[in-house]
Figure (cartoon, rainbow over the protein chains, first blue to last red):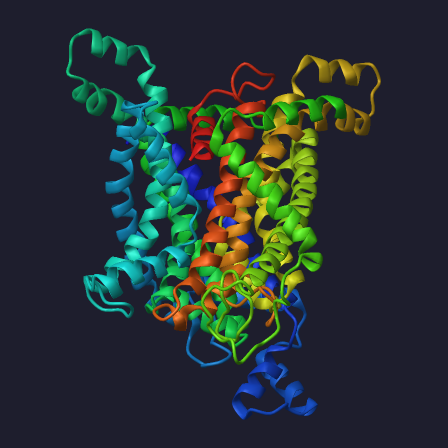
Length: 324
Length: 303
C-alpha cells in the first residue's frame, strides 16, 4: 500500500470516532426522553400490577437511575466500549448477547438480497442504457418505478399469495434452510434491484457518451464487448458506493421483512423491545445497528479508494484546504 | 427569484410532457383534496362497526366492500389518505425549516459551527432511517406527535447536508461578495441572496423525499406505531388484513395499492421537478464541484 492509501485509510478510521460517540449519545438520550420510568416498567412487568413509590425508588437506586444524566451516560458508554450493553429490562438477558445472536439471520437476509439485487439490477440497467429510448427501456423504467414504490410488507404479502399459496413453491413463513430464505430475500431484493437498475442505467448513459467509448466503437469492437469491457467497468464505480450507502437501508428493510415472514432476527428483537418498552434493549439496538452501518460504510469507502484513486486524492486536497 | 417567477416556473413544470408525471401530479392533487375533504365527503363513517356486514364483497353501499369488523373499506382508505398526507405535509414543513436553517448556518458561517453541525448530521445519517424512526416512534408510543417526531428527527439531516453544500458553493460567487461589500448584513445576504437560490433544490428534494415519508408512515403504521386504533391508516389496514390474506385478499390489496400509487406519484413528480428546475443540473448557476463524491451524490439521487 502506498503512503497516500494508508494516509487515507487511517484518516477515514479516525473520522468514525466522533460519529460513533455521537451515536452513543443519541442512543442513550433517546431512551431518557421517552415517557415512563424504566424502574416502574420493570416492576410492573415482574408483578403485573402498579408498584408502590417506595419500591420504585429502591429499584431506581439499584439501577443507578437516580444519578445525573452525564454519570449514567458515562457508565453506559464505558460498559459499551467493553462490549457490555447492560441487561434487558424485560427479560434480564444481556443486551449485547441478544443482539449478536440475532444478527446472523438478519445479515444473511440482507446480504442474500443484496446479491440477488445485483444479479437482477445491474444487467437490467445495462440493457436499459443500451436500448435507451426504446420500448424495453420504457418498460424497465416503469417496472423499476413500481419496485421502488411498493412497500416491502405489501410486496411480501403479494409474493406469499402468489408463490407460496397459489403455486406452493415456497413455505409461507418461518425460518430454517434456504427455502425459508427465498421469499424474504426476493421481497427485499426486488425494491433494491429497481434502485440498482436505475442507477446503473444513468451511470452507463453518462459513460457511453465518453470519448473512449466512441473510440472503442470506431475501432470496430462488437457492441457487447464495448458495453461490458469499456463502459460497464467505469459505470460500476458509483454503483459500488451506492451499495454501501444503501446497505443500511437494506438492514432497515430486512427488519420489516422479517416481521412479515415471522422470521427470527433483529426485527423480532426490536418489535418485542418496543412492545415491552424495553429501553435498555432499544438503546443498545440503536448503537449496535449504527456501529454495523458505520463499519460497512468504512469498508466500502476503503474498497472504493483502492478502485478509484481520485477519491483519496480529492479528500487529500480537501483535507489540506480545510479551515482550521 | 421573486414569488411571481416561482409560480411561473412551477407552471412550466406542471406542463410536463411526461405522461407519467402528469398522472402522478393529478393523483397527488386528488389525494390532497380527499385528505382535506374526508369529513364532508359522502362516505360511511370509517369507524362504525357493523357485525352483520362483516367481510362483505363490494356493493353499492360499500364500493370496495367491508373489512372484518364491517367497516367501509373505501371510507377507511379516504381517512387513511388524510392521515398519511397530513402527517407528511406537516413533517415536510418542519423538516425543511430545520434542514434549511441548519444547512444555511453551517454553510454560510463555516468554521467550528460548520464542523459541529455537520458531525451532528453525520450521526443522524449513520443510522438506517427506517430503524431510527421505528426506535423513536416505539419509544414515544403511538400517535400523531410521535410519528411526526420520528420523521423529523430522521429526515432533517439529509436536507441540512444538501443545503450546506449549496451554500458553500454559493459563498464564493461574485454577487454574494458584492452584496457583502455593499454593506449588506449577514441576515440580509442570507434572506435576499442565499435562500432564493437554495429553495428550488430544497423543493425538489422535498418532493422526492415525500414518497419516502409516505412509505415510512405506512411502515410505522404496519408495525403498530402510528394512528391510534380504531382510526384508519393504510399501513395498519394492511397488517390488520393479514389473517384474511387467503379468504379476503382485497383487504390487503386496496391499502397496499393506495400506498404504492401514492409513492409512485411522488417519485415521478419529483423526477419531473428535478429535470425541470433543479439548478444543479448542468448549465444553471450551480455547477457541482468536480470529484467523484458529487458524482456519486448525483447518481444516487437519480436512483
